[in-house]
Each structure stands twice: as C-alpha cells, then as structure tokens.
Image (tube, rainbow, N blue to C red; front, side, top):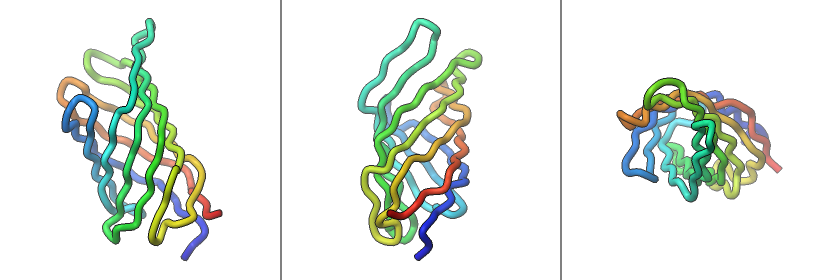
Length: 126
C-alpha cells in the first residue's frame, strides 16, 4: 500500500437537510461522503462559519473520518464560495494510518441545495 494518497478530486454536493449533506466523489477516491454540520455562526461581513464532520467511504469500504472548519464567503444571492480544511480523525482498511489535513474550495448554491468542490493535498501514512 502506498504511503501517500493524492486527494485531487472533484465532488458534487446535495443538501439532504439543513445540517446534512451527501457528496459523490470521483478519481483516486471513488466513493461517497456524508457531511454533518456540528456548529455554525454568521459574521457581520456575510460569511458563514461551520464546524463539520465528514465521513468519506470509498467503493472498497476504506474510509476517512474528519473534523473540519469551513468558511463560506457570499458571492451573489444564495451562491457562496466555500473553503474547508479537513483534519483526519480516523482512517481504516486500505487508508489505515493516513494522517494530516487537506482542503477544498468550490461553489455552493444554498438556494438550490447543490454545489461542486475541488479537493487538494496529498495525505501521508504515519
């Protein structure tokens, strides 16, 4: 098993409920993601700040669980530019031992409950 994994992916987001999201990913990490908001605040400049948990599960059932911070900057109307940093809390199966953090950015239309993200950063195995 390789000691690094490049998360250079794109993801499609669908809002399930106010604090729950489903995400489909492709490329090196084929699989699904469930995201849950654990806390949120709005700042005077219109930005939305979120604490999140993500559960990334690959099609071979390997997984990464993360605890995250996300800032969504307003663009126009209900469209936001999200920037998120994910910190690995647990990894299993083929991804066991992966540690560190990675990032994403993209566009989310809160009015329609859809969005797209781009992930970056290689992960390392301890």
